[in-house]
Amino acid sequence: MNVKLEILRQNPDIAEAPHRVTYDVEVDQTDRVLDGLIQVTQNVDGSLGFRKSCAHGICGSDAMRINGKERLACRTLFRDVVETDGDVVSLEPLAHLPVQKDLMVDQEPFFEKFRSVKPYLIPKTQPEAGQEFLQSEEERELFDEATKCINCAACYSACPILDKNPDFIGPAAIVQAVRFTRDSRDQGLEARLDELDDPNGLWPCESKFECTRVCPREIKITKLINLTKRQVKKYREERGEEPNDR
Image (cartoon, rainbow, N blue to C red; front, side):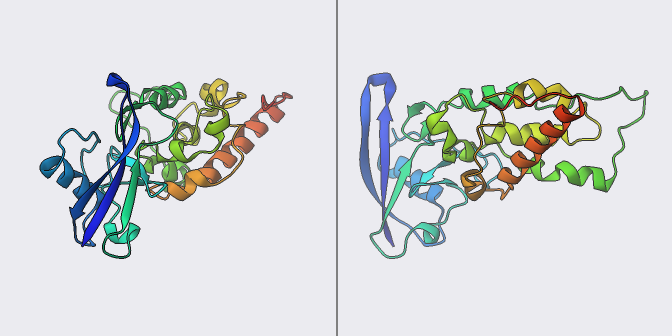
């Protein structure tokens, strides 16, 4: 079938204004949108910019807005976004991040917020030589959901709060914090309290659920954010303190 890829193109390095370019590609319904993009670069226009790596929905590199929704190009089949021959598929870069070229965005602001929550184990104690940190299945289950995140930034792009507050830490960073605040081996919430209990931390989230809707790993992001809000409030209450939610 013939599909028209309508791509929002721009190159800030040469002061090129955003404009839409349409490419005709011949694809099967079971081909991926990524296959269509590769076809364009190999056969039509090699200057088109987009990212890809594993092409199997693991690395998150090829997240973009497809027909207005954040998706992974490698996991989106044409049958998911078109119905008949000649249909148009609109492709745009992720929102809330500076565009480097065409469908490529500068991910540094996203990862700066990601790093701020200390996304690594801060052990409560150091194990004896030759010993391991042991954990029950029940303890592991508390943070298992958060380990699915692939840092694709789809949730960051879809988040409506960032439209009005670009300093909001964003849903992905909170998910990474949850992965460790609920880990029995880690120092947990206290080590990350300054980042989470902040006017630009957890509290701007209004539970719009857009992050949850677009997550390619089906992580219940909004639920994790609300659980962490309650965790912070409980922590503050036990110390006779007020959360920094204003």
